[in-house]
Length: 339
Image (cartoon, rainbow, N blue to C red; front, side, top):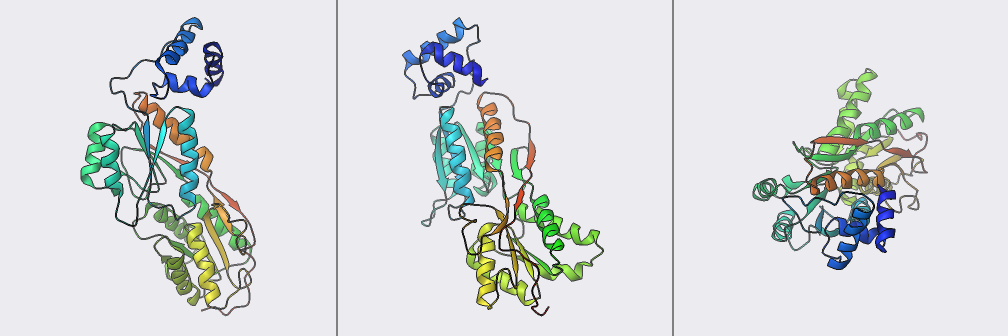
């Protein structure tokens, strides 16, 4: 397809980006330019794009719950770049301190006859029943990336949370850790539940009773301070290592350990999740499971474009394996007394 687009662009005397925008009906392309691109299709024997009955505008909402977690801006930036190349305009929507919510943004987007929406780390269910019903009624193209809750009949792209926990557990177990904690998000948060299930399965396969590992599981809001407090509780129960549900929680765990006068990794090992920006230069550099942001976004955008083009979406969850990036926040267990 890229080769064909290059041929069309060359014949029409425009860039590939302009040709793509013209073929997608972008309002950013002048009518005369669009006509040149369409004539290039005719000359090259390629079919002209068919207008879909529910033709939509070029705006695409990119909804994130917060910009404080550095992995969300990483996803948003990748999405914006790919949408721009297709002649679409990303509209960033995030909760604000003065009370603007996902529901408010969805109402604004629907008022603009939005072309589609990508939810990152949240979903239309977070917006409220009225907004969710409106999206379904209007058949707005939707893709969810790492949704926080269950979403039937939607296209979802997610990191493989269970495999990430298994990788971290195998790494820490090989180093000799026996008292490994798990610090994840609130109860009901779907990615955290997947991590929790993998954590339980790991110990169950080794014949370890639930009474042994369950006290080493902590839930917290996704913030550094909440991570610090909950990590302190796990450390007081004898954890020598903590696997965290995000890099933000992991940095909080490091802070919590230091408040107790403990060394990372001499006394406590910490593993994060995301490998967000700067995790390689924090003190100490964080061992973490890297999400393949680029590949996940590619899949999400292809699914979104298919819907925008009028092709029916096949509800499914596409999982992407993470990669454990080993840095200096993990090591062999120290001599700290077990609780």
